[in-house]
Length: 319
Length: 190
Image: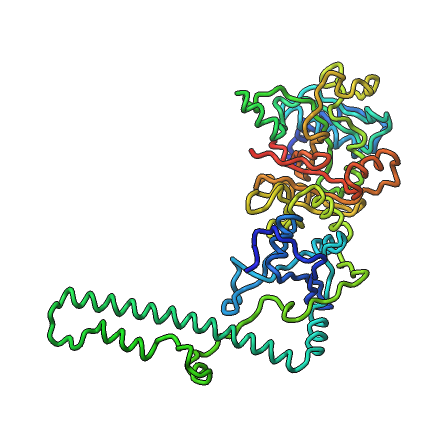
């Protein structure tokens, strides 16, 4: 069981899987990496996994974690991660496996499946036994001394248990054991690496494609230790949290723009009102075009940690 | 039967007469000047602002502004930084009763499009607090003391930095007011 407290750093750089070459979706499958990123690098992502039986599930989602393109880009730029085309690598690595290796992987899965099924069977039998015992003791207390009760049900139960349900004794032959084995469960491992070997680290990793202005704003806010999650649910581009969203409400609804991009005033009014209604500020920001006004702007850029992003916050005036 | 049944033309509205009574100078286009006057009228008579003044030139750079800006004193504080609010509550003060601060007002029309660059230029042209003006409600644009003390030497810096009240005029003469901060300023929790 891996430690899930986020203390253990994964092997760096770790792979970020691009689900398809056409659509840029970046996925993480390893829960340890995900908790470590959240704890140490303020990277949230969005859990998108549903239970196979409930594909329409929309709460309490699980693995995998989908990273926003901006998050993936940031991780690659910081040298923490590299992108891997999942399908390509999977096919390639699978093809390079020998039949014996594949067989052994399958055998492992089969064995794990049997293990799970056996555990489940055991606990079911235990429940049945306990239920029967309860039933017997109840009937004895109400109809005590009933001659029609036949042999002691407790004893009968114990006896049948021995013959039918006893754990397969170790001296039995493997053939007999496999005959007694329950139908194995189908195991779907959450990670493919292992059993597959992790893809090699490329010398110059491909950078995930991002919208330059939204990435600049993202990087600027991330640099200031904000947690950033996608904002579409709140009518903006990013919702910006001053700490982990599990502990804090968000402070800002953020929207990025080019320095000269025309913004409808109605959007500002609407955004400002939307934010104020939920005690947040509407934040717009973009990379300042600093050619125009020399020294001042350059000083500002240095103070901003080199991102050159300038932001404005809008709140309702209350009048 | 040539009885003239047309009712006499109604008297011009208070706003129309107000606009007519103020001659426009050539510093900005008539649209911007009228817009500023209409916002000023709204501030003065609907929101009880005082010490209203229209600035055509930046008090910092002395250059012509992008458009006329208004400075004025609201009847009560329009903005209290959340940290100040917490401090005042701890000291047992009522943050709504604090002394009002002079504000910059940026007149805009809803149909306009703005950009980050223009906001940056407006913020670059103003200080934290508008310069003190002699004479209340002096709209005659005398810029003789436009470059006065920017906030004054003894004045404490505003928490949250520069801010501007964005006044947006709708086609039906509604004016909405939004506070715009320069930089990341955490929101109020009112």
